[in-house]
Amino acid sequence: MHGLTVDELHLIATKTLKMLNAQVNSRDIIDTPEVKTHPATLANLEFKTGDQVLVESATGNVRARLSA
Image 1 (tube, rainbow, N blue to C red):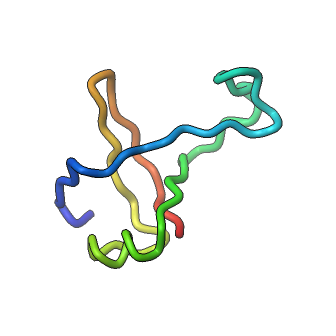
Image 2: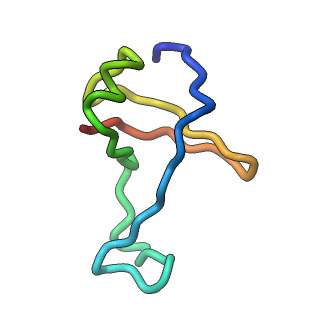
């Protein structure tokens, strides 16, 4: 972990074909969520694909893996 705090990134939750509205089938939940990020953003923040990050909001947090 880099220990960086990034307050200016905006996250967008997307759904897949296996989702109904915003709900996912519990059988399709993966062990480590993935955060897809533009490669330039990763480079600017000194991260790389595969790094583990902590994504936090007012309602909680989750550890996730970065991918470009």
